[in-house]
Image 1 (spheres, rainbow, N blue to C red):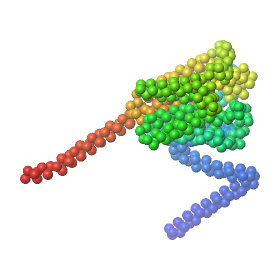
Image 2 (spheres, rainbow, N blue to C red):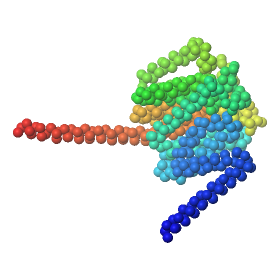
Image 3 (tube, rainbow, N blue to C red):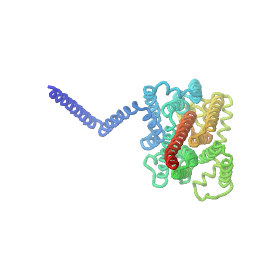
Length: 506
């Protein structure tokens, strides 16, 4: 009887599976008949999405890693698939990962987010929300601008502290962003030496791509635009070189220096002159953070010689990329003077507007504010953009907030005792400082992936004192274990030598 029941059960299960398969086949056939190949593709995509969601809700790390990869590569989707709002994908991954994390992690893990870093960005979000009442900008432009300007850090930093809260996660994060930056660099090299895809050609022919072809020379842009690509590659040069000096393993040192050379080449072919400031400021800050005066002096002399060669010689000017890079130090450069003229115009206009013209009134979302004076201004500088949108009050608040964050991060790095950990923190902090100062010339810190690198780097630095304590405890335990092992070996030797002495006496 039991065998019969088992037989019937398995037979029913197979029957259900066959019925389900037939229904899926009928649905695919109907969808293909109605919407051609799009129907089956949507079904396949839906199945993949369901599997992905299962993994995401079983482990929120899946969602957060996907978010990081997406932020580095979503520009490729925009280039190849058209002008769809792919930025919404960031909010989708953030929302799903937040829901998954709230269900997955216990209350004790959420204690990591109780830091002034999160509090400061929350205050900045509140200030940005209040600006919706500013009559100078449309609510649509405000809604679009506030996402990257204030909402992303409030959502990303706490999530990072909850999901990536172990010292192993820091190593994983560094490897991940180095790999993604290398992918972007190689894609840029492909654009220059192999050729452009149809989507990239369409971008160059659009108004947004007008500045990417100068005198018949391509400014390589990879997944982003040339300004973002050049600046991000510059700070990754700093990250790779600092990490190379922080490791004693020869093959790792050579690998990181090799990657750094690739990043340097990618930075040069971007034709982004502002990348020079990201590189120089980031490198100088890395030297400063070491607190090694011999290294600081040697590095400072090298950097001064580098700038001297760029400023006062013509070495390498036969190469277009080096020639363009050199113009960053030319005070008579037309592009630089256009920025200064813009600031003079804004200074007079903003003198009566302490709270600015409103979020989204200029820049990428100025199309929602075409009737406003500021909508025709090209800010170039993100510092200037904050000033124009949020006024001198907002600029002071934003600048003071970032200065405090960078200052506290410096203190944390200086107090770090573990040398390997310290070099990793120096690499990340120097990169964020380079991005911050480079944003004076271009809108860098507000655009992916640079903004993501800043937010997650600060989160890791705030968590690093706990990493440092754990590493110190591990070193103490290891030292204690080695001491006990040495004592045990000594006692063993004494026991082995004792019978020989007794034998000699007899």
